[in-house]
Length: 411
Picture 1: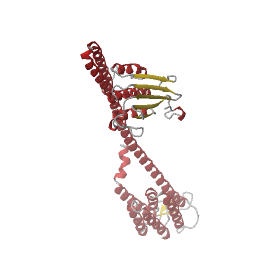
Picture 2 (picture 1 turned 45 degrees about the horizontal axis):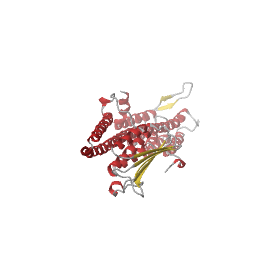
Picture 3 (picture 1 turned 90 degrees about the vertical axis):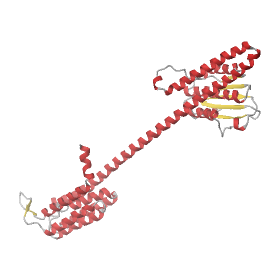
Picture 4 (picture 1 turned 60 degrees about the vertical axis):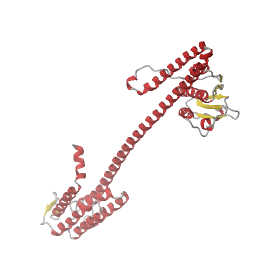
């Protein structure tokens, strides 16, 4: 209810202007009938009939207020001029007769730049103060004259306060709209990032297990004719590979299901599971060597998962593109960095398969590895080696600082 009443004048501005003009015209005409009396009970009394001249001047000033929004400077000049003429006709310039000038001062301060309003308000007050002396020269300062000047100054101050409040509310509204847009953009960005993360996880899981299952199936098919006992063991490993793939897929896809939020998920892989990962590739026929330099130190969960996934994807690429090439996995711990390198001795590959360089990383596998490294504050380099084979090297921070010292970078 309060909000409805406060917005009513804005919704019926023309009615308010007409009512204000009629009221001010009537008050100014009434003031022409008054005069001050002397004595202990001094005060205004009615001494004459209404003046047609004052009525005409007050009507002009009041009607001018109907255009106070479009031409506030002109309206103030007209209202002030009418007040001056009223004083020149011998009538007292009071709050009632100068009411139109006060409304014009308020309008000027509200709809014109504050600097103009601060200059025009005291000028109008000074002009009306001088005009008040046409009626009576002494005493110099009376209550009526002080009231006129104070009324004009208060009208200017009220206009400035109203303007500041309007600007404040407009700023709050703009800030709320900006915050709403920012929340929507942030929500869309988070959804996009989550989609990329899930797609990256699914790619790593599917690519790794499918490549490993393909290698195991091919080996089993080869051994089935000559060494059926070993072929049976390879088929058992193939079943374990597919089961592990299904478990990891269920754990990843289960994050998308609300009703599975309480279901137990597989633990997040990390470097502590690296021996099992290398053993799975070795059972598929790959020769892998592991070297660790420096004292192993714990990583953040994100960096730990990133290191594991990069090694997994790099070895999967070796399986898919380099055949039976041998691979070397190196972990180098320095003061602030963990450097992970996966190098194979396979032949040089076609440019459309493995032509990526440090400045041009393409292919979903390498793009995913690069995104993983950057997401935890690291960086990744991938490219062909001059003497054949391919190398993937990533540097991951061990501490919270995302930017390591140059002296801690290892090659």
